[in-house]
Length: 196
Image 1 (cartoon, rainbow, N blue to C red):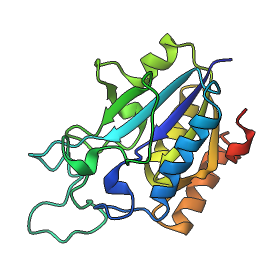
Image 2 (tube, rainbow, N blue to C red):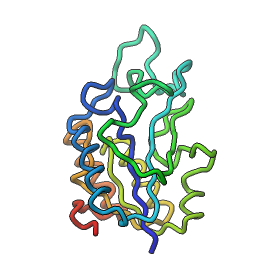
Image 3 (cartoon, one colour):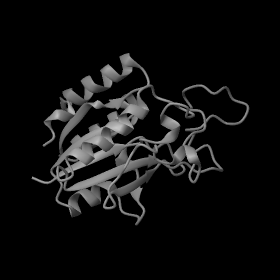
């Protein structure tokens, strides 16, 4: 068994004070860092994704255009490549060996599988190259990118656990629905105290 950790979109724009802030986002950042500090050998591979949207387009209809209301669909401008909002939250401390995945470059890109590494490799290819069979998922937001990443991981044949104390969502009802959908797809819902 080779276990990976997916850290989904723990970015400034998705935490308190950001363009699309999720309540509890900063606590998730600190909690993930604590998990990695307490269990430095728990994961064979660590992936961290970021929305990394193009600054000069609506990213495939993902951003509301100038003059449109800043509704939730399309979303307000967020996580534009190279801006402070796109950076990881300062409380998120990642090992040097972390594989960084950028997604949403010119398109919506909810799932970590929609992104590519800095070296241009797809997430699925990197899982195969590293022999990954099991994935734990943490991050933001439960009802959007965590959901999409978990469902895609199941679709790629991975054994998936969602660490429910290290995720936070946009809204309670949609987050609960997303966790239910992930469980129905075969993901296991656990808390981070299972990590050893």
